[in-house]
Image 1: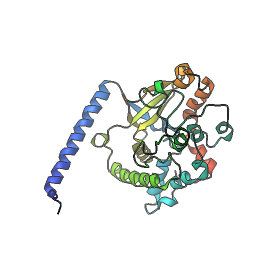
Image 2: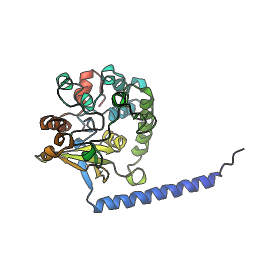
Image 3: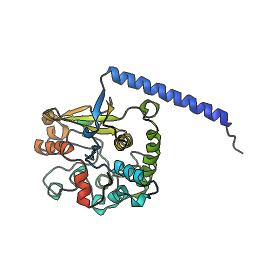
Image 4: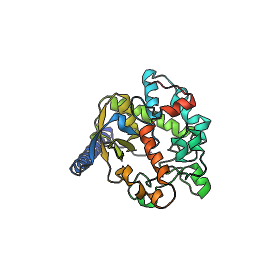
Length: 290
């Protein structure tokens, strides 16, 4: 028979672990504050890496999941727009980042002469430090087919719903995780007690307008958006590419190395300011609760 620690011991250990995590988060928060990496961002300026915005007028698949659950806690996964979105054959046909961004615009999506970006690659390189030098860390089922790589479990076993859109397994994981975190954060948002402050990369237009693109904390962003927060503190993380400026387009990795034109690069950059996800859900003809 296996030995099992007594309950008092397990509770004490849990308390110690939580206190250590809290201490670590406070230290990290303090360092980021001193380094000037913490910024307050309006929710309307927050989006994800595929330009599905957290703005009230936008549409984001994680916020959609929460909105439908909030309206009807008895709803099943199969009945959500979140599930129907990823199971739609048009979403299932995407092979490149371009396909997701311009899912609703066949003219832009089908341009044969333009460079095709694999998932996690963008004109400036990628979203993490040194990605602007090495061109990102590409992944995806199509990428694996054409290169012979295996990136399916890069974010955990079958963890990413975009690796092979339509795969039910990651959708079930996201469903359960989103609801669990929703109930936790609804009781009170205390970022230093849990995973710290959400992280983002800033895109800055020449006119000063910004977009904060999720780097870590997409579920928290979606939950806080659904709970009605107008703005929140995000960290410009030290392991991210930091700030991407429109004015520096000629120095972006895929432009500088001749893979794509400045015009294509700026069209993609501009999409994060123009698109909000609503255009794609409308194109698919799927309902939106919020």
